[in-house]
Image 1 (cartoon, rainbow, N blue to C red):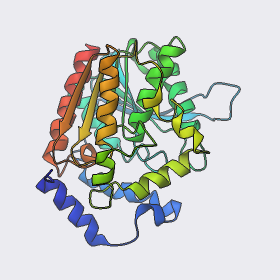
Image 2: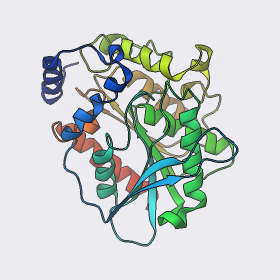
Image 3: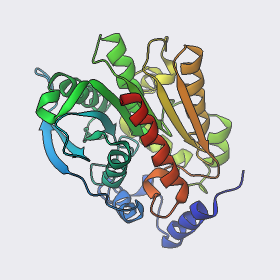
Image 4: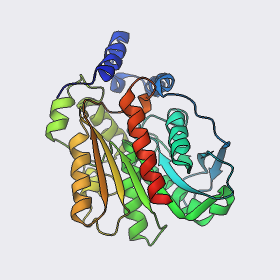
Length: 314
């Protein structure tokens, strides 16, 4: 498979910077790396309102208040909402690294987007991120009026590790009897920590941004044990039952190590009778939606995702 020229230009640029790979950097330095990509995320779309707020963590529990950023593209009193979880292997990434993507999704869909700043590993091991993601989603569904959100029109979504959280929250919401979710947007989702698929072996050797070594670092940072890698709340592809989950859009990149596991997850949903739109963007690399300012396919994928959100929540 040929690499898209715009994706190749980005990879050539970051290769020219030199330096050790992400997993060899001190944690504080590794967390600065995604901030450098903000400039490539496309325009900072204007919003009717952007608020930084917190959501209380259910008591009793170890978590504190959960920071969220609420994007409202129009001044309507009540809007449907996408609860968004950022990527970064559960170790890096934050509200700022995905600010432009969330703005773009809100602007193009006409829906509110609530970006959740869940606790990161290794300071907070699995299932801390899951606990925060579920607590935030449940609170928004129960207190939608506080945020101008329609509790009957809520979707979840995210990219990479955030896509993992969106799948897990969809499973938990079904199994725990709520909240009722209308849609899940899964952007190159990490759904299998034990992945040895052809795409992982072909594209994970160091030439296509995400590497097998990086994935191993994320895995060891997030999970306390190897056994946890097969738990459905860590690797949702191992769930026993996919029936009754919300409709999904699954976006994968053709030159991404995670491509095959994302497509395998889409097939499991389809086999269980869940409506799924699977879109592979050929020649693309992991994170291409957050590079929409320099990669045209990122703009296209955001438009496609926003259309799917709008259709699901209309």
